[in-house]
Image (cartoon, helix red, strand yellow):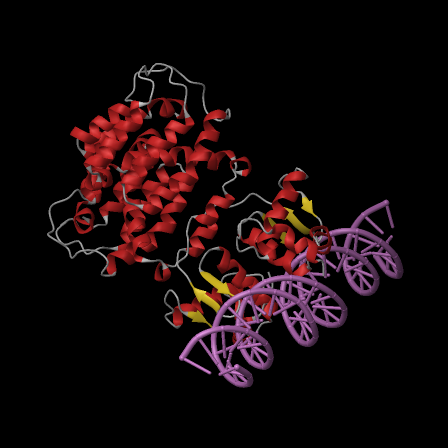
Length: 234
Length: 234
DNA sequence: AAAGGTATTATGTATGATTTAATACTTCAA
DNA sequence: TTGAAGTATTAAATCATACATAATACCTTT
């Protein structure tokens, strides 16, 4: 590693390309000027001269910010700071087929961690109407819990509603993102075979807990609801 | 100047820049040819002619894939397919300064949800050595829990270790990502003032639970550990 | 003053030239 | 034969310039 030949202005951080540097420079630039959402940033040519690079580099750096939802650009209006959408791009990358097994397994666990841990949010924000809706959803479920062949549609409906009740939109979007991977894991031979179907808390049971229980009892119920998954995991 | 192809992608009035189109075209192209990780893709000029756009557009599209970790390019070797890294780009987007208040609040909640819900993973994978390490960490903490001025370093050390114990690398990386935003929220006037410092489970108390308790008792202990945060939230 | 046309402007796209770094190739000497 | 040094080649990285496009502002005409 010959540090002598490296340019002075990119010593810290081992950044290789000018675009990488321009990207962070732009973000620093925004932070320096305290840009708020909606503010317009200088034109591409100005930024190019400011950063001492060509417009091509600036554009490719902006392209990255653009795709992360950090800026939005219109034809003549220029480029404006926007509220970055954290998860939209994650969704794009979330082709379960190209994720490695470890990550898929991680996601499988992650979902259960989330749903067990969201008890307090649920009880703080749930309304009677929510509970009624949940009862309506589970009303259509087959009552015999034995051998309830995983019904994807029903799963999304019920658990999605839970995420919605938390009032946490980031959380909700996580679900939309994680669920496909979750289903993928279930079908692929990534986990142990189904050990033994023990009795576990049904969707309806969970709603009952939401109606009459506490965050603590909910967490335990949800943990139990996932019992089969946990068994296949450990 | 092929105007025919430009009108080809007029689907449902989306804002379709050529780069957007090129991006998905590239992904389709890779999928068609069944590219596996490590395969090299054609040169930029070839792709340009293939997709019927200029090299500029191809580069800006590749730039997006590159930053999502879906491809990696070296100088002479060309561009190769790589294993996408889900979270690296999220980390970059995580500039607390430009996230809106709702998202920041969401993240604040999200962290607590995660740590409350991770009880089962912890108990499944924790070793005595982990517990010893945790005791070593909390040994340095001031014993009087009263008015423990939030010590960022200590927080990261302790809670980071917990994430590590879960053995879930995706989860661990989430922490690295969420923590800055979490601290940011604590300092900004986004939450209610500190209501009243009630007694709550200390770090040491959590370790005791990990040593002698169960996933269930841990969840409750962690919930209690966050009591002050929850009070400021609701 | 309102309608409509024109000029201006900043991004979007295209093209070619130049630089850079990695790889392949060649040469020559031990 | 080996291997070390130097050269050529390749493809990406960067730069510079020109033109296209669409949105805005400006101006003219009635």
